[in-house]
Image 1: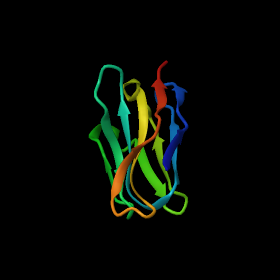
Image 2 (image 1 turned 60 degrees about the horizontal axis):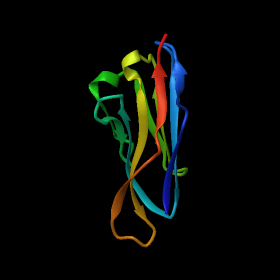
Image 3 (image 1 turned 180 degrees about the vertical axis):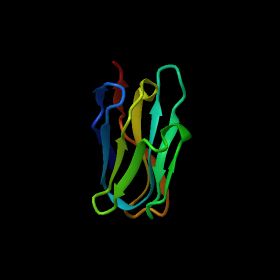
Image 4 (image 1 turned 90 degrees about the horizontal axis):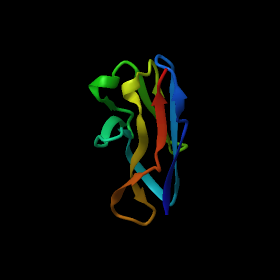
Length: 121
């Protein structure tokens, strides 16, 4: 079994920062791409940022320069540092990872349970 557990959401004011963490655990052989998605009320889930096992990163335009994604391959964790938060960043944030389990020949997508981020004055 594989689990992704997120932490770090909360309520902040515009311009403040939050740090989201996600830890993968279980029967893991290899973790390929990791990323963060978000879903605001009434909207579709969207990709926020991704990072490959080689630390190549990709961001949606609206968060470039404000958010930073990083990972620790030894600890199977991925972090999203969010600075200069805006009300439009309000959403449930989900961790995602492409993981090959021990004794498996293929990788599957796994999701965390989601963590609420609210930016409001």
